[in-house]
Structure formats: structure tokens, C-alpha cells
Image 1 (cartoon, rainbow, N blue to C red):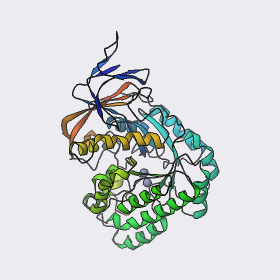
Image 2: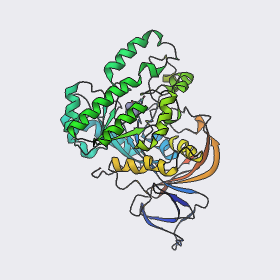
Image 3: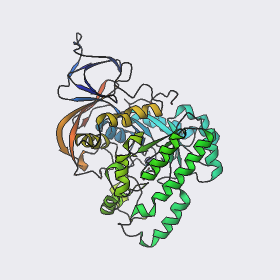
Image 4: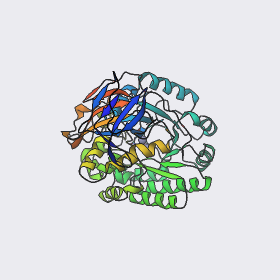
Length: 441
Ligand code: NCD
Ligand code: ZN
Ligand code: ZN
């Protein structure tokens, strides 16, 4: 296939170049390429040509929660959002904590996925050795220092330290950094008012809890010399602590979600449980700090965490935390780029280049010869409004319904095959493949 007349966008900048794919790979990039006999030609005049986005943080609920998402609906939503690779979190039912659950989930993903995928292993107080033994088969290990959706949790020092020191040091350990003891304390204080749907989640799970857990994780990472990736960083203080640790040589990287870039605690107050997520939507000051310190963010991941409207309509205390987002990340960031808040290059660095580097996805990560032909064609001029109806997630809602977006995803290719075209997924269930991991750095 030959994609002609488009503007290629990478982490280094934009170039008007043609791009040729063959047998799932990018094989040629040059000016003025001429079609070969019988070659399919895509005219990308006026369009931007982006590498497929890599979302290293999704919860596709398969198995155990397939009434709200499964590998087919979740990956279709990803594809429609220009995300051609996802890494799925382990807090499914059963949680992925060992060989058996990993094999079960791998079979489900292989049968249903329409984008490429990798799986996480979840840490428990008991699975230190087993987890380390499975490291080569997973994208990373996920460790919850504070309880969130699902049962995974490690709070005691001994298993925490043993996971940090035993799990292969060059493989990312991804941490949900909220401190359980302080969550319990502030949660108990909030209980009397927690039947009201307008309870401020940011006070129930305050920034202090994130700061305590992060400090603990950084100290243990420094001591053990291991790699650490902080999931959903939400506050200025956390970004400062991570920056300081990096300067000292701690092998730490961090993720920020579009939710925390685009929404605040005021939105949670207004949206009620639809804005309930862990860690919570933060103050306007913290949100602005994420933009101001954008350079220090390594990855943007969605934390796509679908729950049904019915589940969300329960009282505050019972309603599950989590918000869908895999389909809206690229549109929101494109729109921010069109407003001049950020450059597309900086977005691609955080949504493609760095995720591939950090998680060792060496066949992904750039529009370059030899890489998988994961390609997104964008019309930068087209405008539209996000609606719940556009969402392909089974949960059927987005907190961004009503948001005006400039820049539209026209076509998405996974390893050279057209999977999505203007509103319609045409990819076949099972066409997504497991990613391969190489030594990450
Ligand atoms: C996530 C979920 O629902 O799986 N919820 C959330 O609020 N982020 C779990 C998690 O990542 O903490
Ligand atoms: Zn989390
Ligand atoms: Zn999550």
C-alpha cells in the first residue's frame, strides 16, 4: 500500500512524505514515491499521517466484567480512537496474578482483539516468585498500594519490598500510588456525608495519600535500583517529587491521564459519580500544573475504566470509581494541539514514542522503516462534537459528551490493514496480535 501526499507527524516534527507498507510493515518513506503495478494507493492530501497511539493503561473487564466491556468492544473503541496497541490491566475477575489467569486472558484477547495488545500481571502479597517467573510474558507488573476497583492490593512493607526487589529490574513495575492507611482515615471522616452524590472525591482521597505512597515507592525504587512507572500522576507535588528522583538517578517514569489534564474536581462535583475516579479529579491549580510541567510527563495513558450508568447511579459510597477514555484521548489531544496548548510532536512523544520505549515494544513507536504499519490518518480541519452515541465502549457514555473537537480521525490501520474508517470499525475480531517485548530501557 502507498500513502501519498500526506504530512507525516513524528516526535521529531512534520514532513511531507509518502509512505509504503508491505506485509504488515513500513518499508519505504520518501518524497514522490510512484505506485507499483497493482499497488493500493491512499490519497492523504490535506491529511496528517500519525503513528498509531499506544495506550499502556486500559481496563477491558474481560473476563468477569464483560457486561461493561470485553476485548472486542474495548479494542473497537481503541481503534476508533486511533489507538492501535493497548496494555490491559490485571484487575479483572479473576485478577491476573499467575499462570492460569494469564493464559485464560491471553486466549480471550487472541479471539476478540482488533488492535495489538499486551497484558499486565497483578501483584498480591503472596505471588512474588510466581510473578517474577512470568515477567517475560507480560508488559509489566501492576501493583496497587491503595485499594481501587477490584481486589488487588499490597500495603505491607515486606511484600512490597520483595516485589520491588524480585521482579526483574528492567521490566516496568507500574504502581497505583495512593496510600491505603490514609485513604481509610480520610474515607472514615467523609462517611457521614458520603450518601450525597456530590461528595468531593478529592477530599475523600486527597493529594496527601498520593504523595505518601509515591514517596514510599520512590524510596524503595532508589534502594533496589529497579524501574518504576507511576500510573495516573495527578498533582504538582507528585511531578516535582518524580523530577527530583529522576535527577538523582532513580529509574522512574510517570503517566498522566487525559481525565486529569482536561477535568477538575469542579467537574466531579457537577457530574457526580460519572466524575468519580481514583486518583480523583484534582483542583484547578493541580490541573494547570500538569500542563505547565508537561515536559516532565513521560506517557499519557487513558486509564480507560468503564462502568455502566446503572452502576454509576448508585450512591457515592457504592458507585465504582473509573471513567472510560480510550476513544477520546487522541481527539482531545488533537484539539488541544489545534488550540496551541501543546504541539502534536509532544503528544506523539508521550502517546507513542515513550510508551514503546518504556514497555519494550520495539516493533512499535514510530513511522519508520521496519516498524509495524500502525497508522492513523487525521483531517486537521474537520470539526465535530463528541457524543455518547459515538462511543463504542459497552458502557456507552463519556464525560466529554458535548465537547467540540477540531481534528477528525479518518482512517486507522493496524499492521497495514484498514481497521477503521470514518465512524465504522471493519476490523475482524481476533485480528489483533499479542505484542512482542524486547529489553526495555
Ligand atoms: C480503575 C478500574 O475501574 O478498574 N478505576 C479507577 O478509578 N481508576 C482501577 C484503577 O486503575 O485504579
Ligand atoms: Zn489505578
Ligand atoms: Zn487504572
